[in-house]
Length: 406
Image (cartoon, rainbow, N blue to C red; front, side):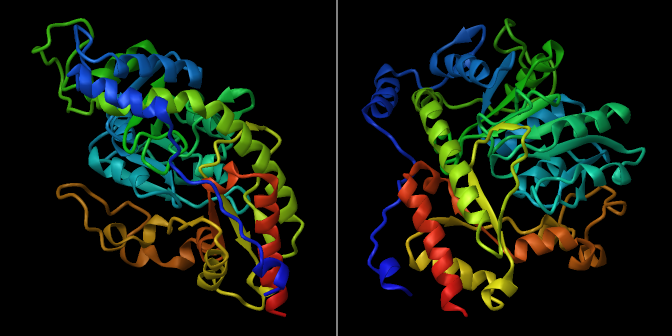
């Protein structure tokens, strides 16, 4: 370790970030005694309803519906789109488990698609080979906030009469070819969990632009109710996924802060990508020219172990941690997870056609996803809220690591 690196004291921003406005918003709800949002025909708290309007405007969509969390948001979207018993849904093999477990929850079958070696997102060139007569939808995940190749994915879906859900849990504010993500497909889903770039600790949302689908989404998330109808009439099967009023209040104040944070993340992300890609053996997640804005939930980086004297992933993470650089764990490819590998799922569903489970979960079947997982690390979104010297420090630490292993 060089003395220059050893003597530096860099403190990265913390997350979540809050101020007196956030505290007041939550306190006001508590003092009001209106702790839930009610229903359209019988509104109680107003924050849930107002947040939905504000988030729809921010995401440039016609409708937004708040819900309990990002996992439920995907489940709600699938159900509203009519995806169910023994249907197949194509999902990226690298994502948080919710992308696939939500498919399981509606009694459908996730079909894994390998990822692009440069963007780490679902490889649209491999989707068509996975389509069967039972395929009903594609879920595209904007990993790290980096938009997928949505124009190509939508074209494939239209060709085969498939629905498209965009999992935007990482991608609040991301824009691809002039359009906010979540608006390319039939529905977009979001998470407001504590680590997300807009957060209330928990919470989620679904956006869409279709009137009929919007009615189905609302009805499913609010126990089968219909907008404007009597509170105790339940017209279709649904569940209780309403967003809590306290969360909505906090999201409204957090949303006000987001544009400036979004601007800082994008400026720092562009600079950090430039200086890290100049290091031999380091390759950041690719950002195409078609990406206008990126949410930057995390900042994924792939390394060539041979350029670092056969360093392991664990050693790389340890070095970054020892130097105070905030990191996040990478998602393991989902075919490796116990519930899929050992097929510990739902009774009565025919999973035999799935491309995972038992021998099908052999890592040799997923070369790109395994290579990325074994040779990459993720920087926390916290780092991108820092200053230019924070980005330079990250570069210097990685260069110092490389020198130390010669």
